[in-house]
Length: 412
Figure (cartoon, rainbow, N blue to C red):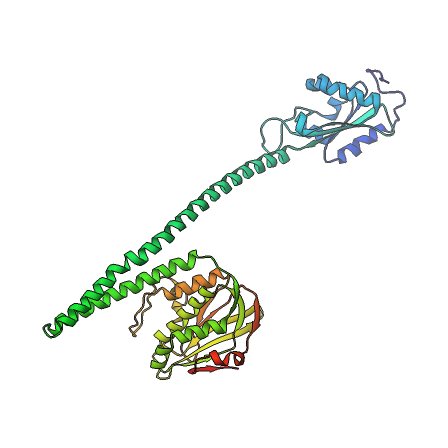
């Protein structure tokens, strides 16, 4: 089975040198050895990797050029290849490298290699050994393992942070209940006693003293309103969105009914389009319309105030809105008005905390939508918003005629 160590087998065809060209075409390191592990051919890639030229490699024992190949774990398996004809593989995972070659791309250590050896079909006393450079793949794999470990560590940290945030939110909820009572109760007492003093001493106080009392009452009332709005703003971001079918016509009618006195005092005309049934949180959507309609009333200086609660169909879905003919909003402040405590410059003095529209933005965002304001050419402001929620149907207002307040103009 073994050929002479001094020469190639007599059956070797004269055309074997043609392998030079074929081996040089391979994108991997390649050599041909005989049964004595003597090198018969050596391709250009191996020359590039080892700086050993073909003429310096051919005819030499592989174990002489690379002593590690003479080790039992290599030479025995190569001899088994010639004895039994079964291909041999030296995996990169187990053997790391077959030939101790310095890696490319500036990497350290030895080139990580995947080596395969099989007999030539036409020359069973010769074997082709191919060597693939896996160094870069192993480096990338090691980097991926490191990144995965970092991601797992970051995930654990994020999970811990989320648990801490959940606990902090619980504490904030508890604080909200305490603040709702403990902060507002002293203010209620201040207001009550100030009004009692004003009543009992009304005939003894000077106009200046009466003005002082009025300022105390007004200031405490504003503080109570601010606390109420702050709690509502905090609650709008913490409470879960309880998605249920919500008839927006019913929501708006309830809001208008609650604002009926103010609407009648200002003789505001309300135009209501048929609105859809959506999947959403009824309480939060009620707060949304409450704030937008109250905002429209607050900034209405027109002698014939009008509020139009509308819905439009767009390619991406429906766009809901509340439009008024009030003082309008400078487009330069179209983003700022949705920030907490935003107070825009205006010649009209309007009471408020500047939180109502911030709550609207929170509610819309928690329903997966967007909210913005437009300034129509005819004046006023048009607040428009979307909800990322399925629309069940548009409900005709005719079917709810009994529930519509008589001061509303319904668009049937």
